[in-house]
Length: 363
Image (cartoon, rainbow, N blue to C red; front, side, top):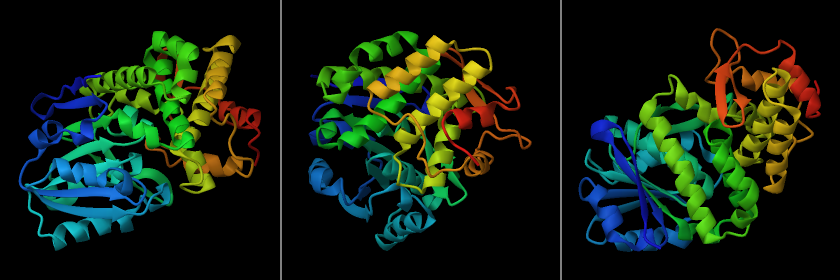
């Protein structure tokens, strides 16, 4: 298969998203986006043995440095960010240095944030190696680290020079990570693409067995949706907030259970179900609509309930730290219908508690 190329249209800061097999081996994919002669590859202990040498071979002739991070969401913090800064400075990296984020969403988020901050901004390229990163976190320029009181609370909007999604990397992805990525794929169908959601209902089993054609189609459709939203609302003043369907609940689950114990996509899957159930309470989704969402999440072999040890007061405390909270009111992304989402703080006052009780989360 040849590579598919989409574009995030942001004027002078527009950039391509390349999707296809064997892209890491192609110099013509990487080299045009390298600003100077210095390159800092940020990766982790899991991804490096698989793909680091391939990327380095594609960059032969450049001054290459590597920052090796531990693997896991619990390391997405200020201390790890400091490690990247230390290595950039130790290598005397200048403002023309290009940071390459080689890994999943954690690597992409933290490497992108380091690039946004180092010498007030250096170029970076996203090379996502997980399904979740390929369909969501690598596109759109959201970069961040976590704080103990909230996920992604310290960060910046900073766009990459390019996104290079080599679909061959999905062959080495753990089954659990693959399923976590499918959660974000489902999200696009729910918020803006009912035809895609219907396709997923028919073909999600093909994604689970890593059918290459199905995966490429799902990645392309998801990235196309994300690119359109980012082009229309780069800094999340309006439409882009809809991409957070399920994330207020999901981020709270991640924080309450301890970063890294649940994967982001797993928490988002449950969060989307909670949002869909609350949308039903608000008088929008029908019972059959909610059942469709539940059935697809279950068919995707994703969790349908939060961990039993989580308490309702914990979740609500973390939800209050969500970035969409305005004047103390929790704003949620809900569904008007399948394929149409909206952001609101106007829902029945008991709806959050009723939703938590439905999902067996008690104080």
